[in-house]
Length: 232
Image (cartoon, rainbow, N blue to C red):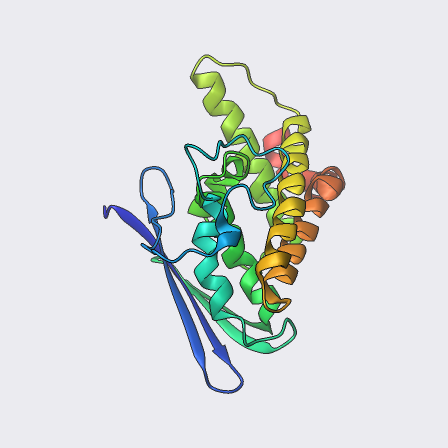
């Protein structure tokens, strides 16, 4: 087993130009291994449009961890617009995913990885999803994975002698917090981006996240018959 999990995002544009990002996650913690940069822009400072519910202190964390890790990506897409077409390949050890889409939709899952693995105490509640990353997932796939993650967490809490919450109320609370962070981080991005690609990528990510708790009950009722053999 290697020390790191590698996820590659490769973008090929209609002009023939390409952009590639190699992401490395610690194999034990799923923490993103950051690139070493000395010239981080001012908008990455923790106090710049700091999220209202951010528990971090600027003395210990001078930079917003998500902003610091995403700043290099912001720069790479500065010459593109949200609706430019792009072919995206996502490469992990087990397989390769590919999709022809818009730039904003192609950046959204990349942003999702960085936001959940950079060390934000709020967003890292979704970090287990990254280990089984599924780019361009449908709302049904996302709900299934999110509910599975939530119930797995409750099982692990139970095994550790802690209280477990078997309803989806806890998942709804997590998504409410994530929504607050997404809203405030979008303000940070709006002040930093030279175009709309990165902001719209976050807006798309947030809109998708908002749909999960709203559609979860309906979707779970619809797939209940799939579990008939287990419900006897």
